[in-house]
Image (cartoon, rainbow, N blue to C red):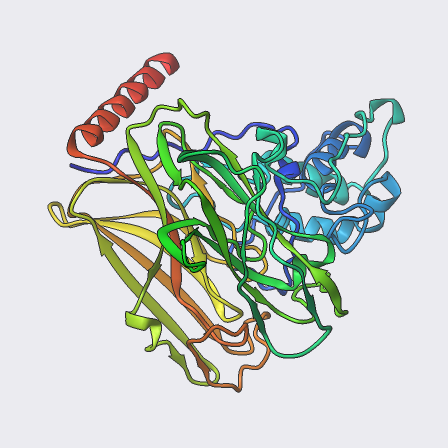
Length: 465
């Protein structure tokens, strides 16, 4: 049975979408982009900041580019935006900003928490700059947004405050030095009695620490009678620089174990990465985990898990000579049907592109589910598929995970193309794996979902006719 049909993206104004942007370092790509958009500026209609552009900046830029934000400049007033208008044009036209790197017109385009601008908005910004960046009538200005505080939870805009908090123990991170790892076990604040189902999770480094936290993984541990801890085998979540968080689809359960503690595995990079790197000591650095729970009587049929799928056994074959490229490929199949709810490539400074595909042995067909041609180490987005677009994978089909690395001077993120690069935990080393959230189905549930989507597609076609 084939994968469900992929529906084309339907662009709408995403009011306040930028409020979900996670605090992370601004991407430091160079001018040569893998996926430039050549927006047309040939527009006879007058485009003004007040009537046309201000709302785009408010909804998509000001969450980071403001006082206390992580953007390298403020974009709050007309004067601010006009001052950087040429740079804004280039970044917007090349789809470098907002920083959500997922290829257009390749694979599934229906994504949750998608920060990308519509082509209409891109054309509007380009035309405005090309027309001289006029202010227009001040009476046309939209009301200034009520932005959340820069240290608030991004997902709180959708779910309210977290039900559970699990802050790490504090640690000082020097301004420079070797990579550091911090692995405390902590109690959780607001932990309920008994097992529950998780609705959403977000990891948030506090304050200036956002650019020094390379990753922060969390697993559940149970305190034993002898004072030791025993892992449950369940992962809470994974965080890497720039990741928003995870949203669990309705009707499935990612378990929150009873009486659990959190074991942190935090990788710290002194000085930080990106244009807004601290380059200073971060005292008492804390990484927080927020967990939103479903009610105790929440009903579900299937369970979901988050797993790191490595491409190679132990990844030890990942060796790049100086001034060369490298491609890695991994495959995974299941003996039961699954739904892929989200995927997130992981790598370091030499990773440039990644794709997720599925191969159907019965038909010999391969389909691209999603691709990132211009990947950035400072924005590890988890690409969350829409409820009606999350790919349904029949038993026996093969997920194909690919990554392309660039250890040459053409890679603007490469600190030294003359170095040999091996697999390793340090930022200067490389990794090759995907984090994938998988809902495990049975044949009956799989068939029901396929039929349900086919009926919705027929209804959409009938509505258009």
